[in-house]
Image 1 (cartoon, rainbow, N blue to C red):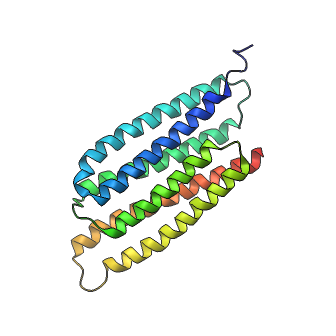
Image 2 (image 1 turned 90 degrees about the vertical axis):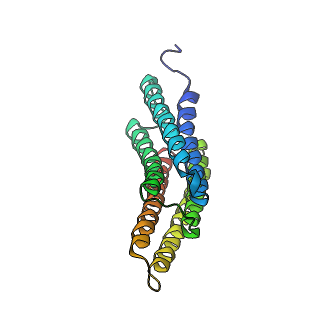
Length: 204
C-alpha cells in the first residue's frame, strides 16, 4: 500500500527547502548591500538559488499529487508556495535593481532594512519547518509581523533622510527605489505570515 500512502516527510522536507533558500538569498542581499562590490556576484548566486527554490516547488507539487490524502488542502499548499516564491522574487529583484541603478555606495538605511528582512525570512523558515506545531507557527508569525512593522518605521526614516536638506535628485531616485523594494519585500513576508496563520488555524 506504499503507493497509496507515500511518505509525508518528503512533502514537509520540500516545503522546508523552499524556505531555506529564501533565508540564503536574504542573507546574500544583506551582505551585498553592506559591501556593494559584491552585488554583481550576489545577483548571479541569488538567481541560482531562486532556480533551486523553483525546483523544490516543483518537487513539492509532485509529491503532493502523489499523496492520496495530503496533510493540508491542495489549494492552501499551492497558495503558500506561491507566497514564498514571491518573497524570493522580490529579493532577487532588489539585488538586480541595485545593480541596474548603480548603487555602488553603502547606505546604512538599506543595510538596516535588509537586516530586518533577514530576520523576517528566518522566522518564516522556522515557521515552515514547524508547520505541524501550531503554537510555534503562530509565535513565528508574530515575529514576522513585528519585523514588518519595524521595517515600515525604518523605511519612513530612510525616506525622510533622503529628502532632508538639498538632496541630489539622482540619489533620491536611486535609493528611494531600493528602499521601496525592500519595504515591499517585507510586505510580502507579512503575506506569507498571514497565509501560515490561516493554514495553521484551519488545520489545527
